[in-house]
Every structure is written in structure tokens, then in C-alpha cells.
Figure 1: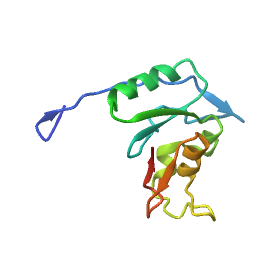
Figure 2 (figure 1 turned 45 degrees about the vertical axis):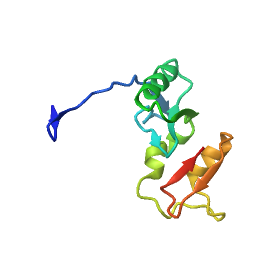
Figure 3 (figure 1 turned 90 degrees about the vertical axis):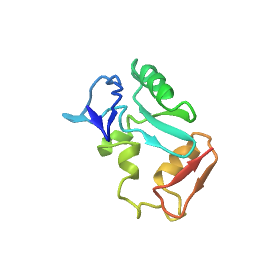
Figure 4 (figure 1 turned 180 degrees about the vertical axis):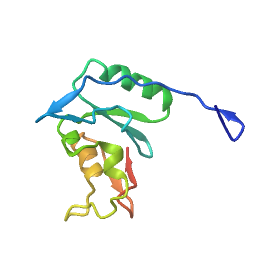
Length: 123
């Protein structure tokens, strides 16, 4: 397949084992990652495939810090980082800190939040 005359490179990611809670299969996937200015946040699930997925994404984003964050509880809300940052500009806490920024801060990263919550810089 080509787009604009250029061939697409298809990169495959593994799938974690299915996670079921209260009879509902939760959307555990490594494809729900978030690309920030200097890092890539990748959902992990305490699964053997976590390290494989992180390795694949490190190859795809060699100039960014690829950070795995356990999302076993987060996906109970039916999504992970990419979903958190899509179309939810009003998703700020009272302190003005976005959900993604708070997750980054909890991982020990210094965070600067831009004028819109969708844009978070971690370094």
C-alpha cells in the first residue's frame, strides 16, 4: 500500500493476554500509546509481552524516551493514554493539571503543561 507515492511500513505490536473484569473484556493494547514532545507513554499490563512492545516502540521512536506505565486499572475506564488525550480539553483537575500530566508526574518526570491539556511536555 502507498500513501502519497510512499510505501507504508507496517509495524506489528504484540497483544497482552486478555483482561476480563466483571465479565467484560477490557481494551488492553499497546497501540493506545501517547506521543509527547520528548517521550512516548506506553500502557503496560504486567504481561510478558510488555517488554517486547516497549522494545518495538523504542525502535520506532529512537529520539524519545519510551516509558511503560501499568494501566491495568486505567483500562477499566475503557481506554489508556491515547484515549485520555483525545477530545477532552476540559479534563483538567482543579489544580489545572491534566490526567496525563498527573500520570507523568507520578512516574517521577518533570512536566510542563501547555495552554491546552492535550499538549503535555515531559522531560
